[in-house]
Length: 193
Image (cartoon, rainbow, N blue to C red; front, side):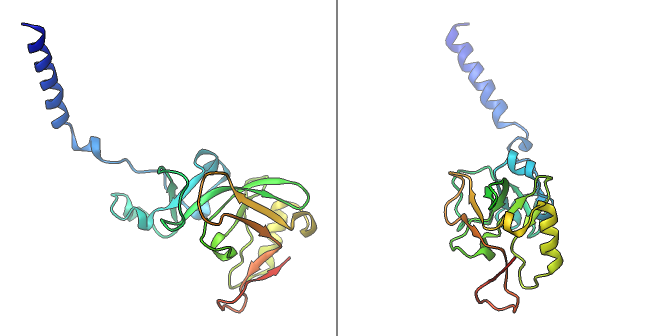
């Protein structure tokens, strides 16, 4: 046989194999899924951006395993856009006493802390939130101080910012204290230390 015939038969065999490959080879595997409350510092060290997947992945076979609190690593292009989906983006937090901690922020189109939801990880890895919502409780503030191991004067103000090139929109700001809307209105948040 000449070389052309062998090449044609070889290409035909490759095309036949590709066309008859198992359909499983084209199905995406289930990504790593995490509930919001279980996200840890090492999750953001491995994947700097997480996406809320309940809506964005509604056509995926694993959708039934998700709810509004389920996130997965973002594998798309960076920077992410807050108009596309809800993202959690790795951020740096600089405390008043000069301590630097890691955490995450939800990029937004506004500077509203209720949308940004900045969350830091204490040195022990405990997640600390500064947005107390509509029902602020003194025990939540006290637990945050214990987790960070510092006083209000050592902590506030906190400057936070998403790491470079991860997102568009607003993803930085200053925390003067714990924020809440105690009367449940859509009015301006109050700040309390």
